[in-house]
Length: 358
Image 1 (spheres, rainbow, N blue to C red):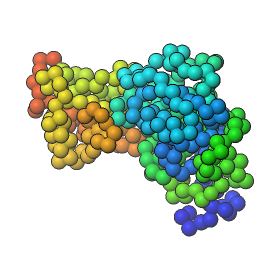
Image 2 (spheres, helix red, strand yellow):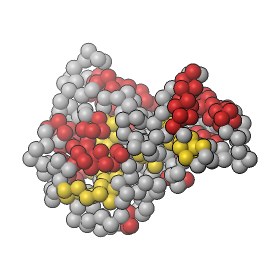
Image 3 (cartoon, rainbow, N blue to C red):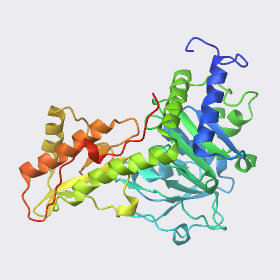
Image 4 (cartoon, one colour):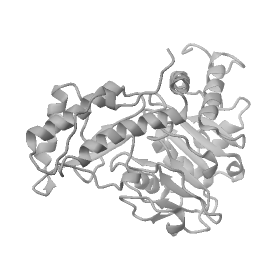
């Protein structure tokens, strides 16, 4: 397929894209009044694309849940007046408490903050007077069912659950494409160019290999049992690790309210004598590498607070989750003694795994 032209009507490339689009609609139960677009540029490309496609009045409200929400808002500032709501560091309140501007072109929310580990696990109730809700779902899409009708636009870059990095999925409600694009919007970021091209998503050369892999990844999610089964697996895996953290007697610390703890990223710190111990966190990461468990440090480029992070994307095997759970327990038992700790044995049998069709 890498050698095939994307301009061939009904050819292998266009068929692959059509299949991926159909499977995405089936998995997420996307209504017919939404377009599914496949774009270049990753999440950072969408940070510019969102205001350039939707901001007819020149103003947008961004829910400040952390680094990625601010990264999106700071990019949008180049084109529109951005008003930050919050900050919401440990929980996300109902939208009725956000204090948004009713005349904003859109509201913006990052569904999962990978650095701090706060995630919206249930769809919000959207007030009738609220502007369209646009969400960055890059690190959470395909981890749970989502009520697409709550949102004006959902975007997710690959490199997480969606497949190899290099393609971005945009799910956009059709009526929002009736708005004119910003005069500065380049055609490669204009949702209308892809949605209304003769063959959808063939305005320019698509990322063929990435879309081929996305198509295969969507097959795998269907074989797992769909979004309900995937969500059960994700919750079970994350809960097991959070249980170890909560029963460590204060050695491992997570400050996010339990109902907003990320299932894709278990973020935590190591504390001794009531404060974060950076030296022990560095030892934790290095000792983990020695036994083949890699990259447990938090994002060093963006995190203002030192800490550790366990990524739990769908492709991570259950045996890997078991291994890191055992390592968490062993490390705590070696370096911390506290009567309040209640660490239990972490076994393979403690993980629920949905049946996979061979």
